Image (cartoon, rainbow, N blue to C red; front, side, top):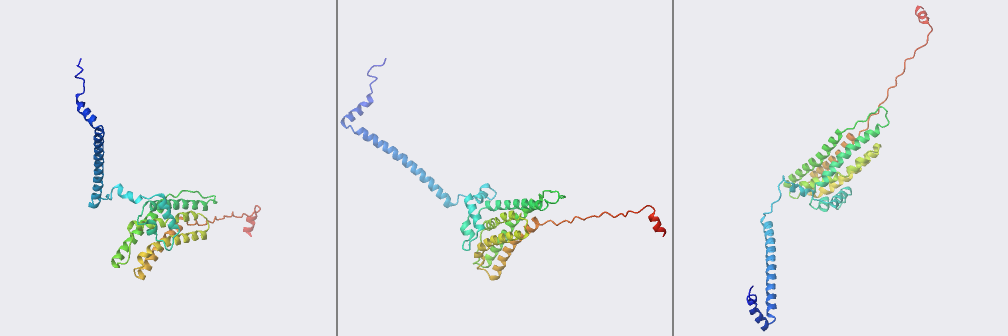
Length: 305
């Protein structure tokens, strides 16, 4: 057993004497130590946060944060970074062009996307092929000798036609404006993606037009086609006119005329190729030969006479 003296806490004798002399000394000292620890922890956290902010600013200003490469997924992801509200607003502006509203400045806001143009072209190609097959089926439904076979090659033809138009024509237009910008400094030019985006959204009106072409009335079909070309062509004219109005009158007039003519040629070509009326087939009427009933021996008598 340990002696009672060994179990006494001799280390607290000095603290007991100080507490007896000044009762608030221990509380003040402990409070000061606690405040010191808290201030030290806060200073460390503030210092770490300041270092992180300073490192981020240094990376941004120093150019260490590099843009993604062309072959990476993050590079192409920025072109599809758009929500449903923005796509619907851009489609609405392409259907109802306003004279004082530029499509690039008011709708795209220099943030073009490829999501809308890609799916608009895909939907238009699919709708064009399906409507063409339905139109052929409805025209020949009354003919008993008609046997329907789906024309799947029209999907390929429609897809190639629409996507080539939506990419090659904007590329040619963008290259021409770049060349004219070097010739005349006051001529402006949009980016390549902005030009493609304008053409892609301008094709949306052709989707309901293709569906309305199922009505088997030729005059009504051409009316819907002219209306669609007028609205979508107005979007192109109002968008690109501020860029080419500083050029010569001849170049501006020729360029805008070619743009509208190609846009109309697309509609006319789709109407003639995919919705051509089937030729009316006249069924030949064959008459049976008339046989005269003669008595036996009458032919011989007529031949002898």
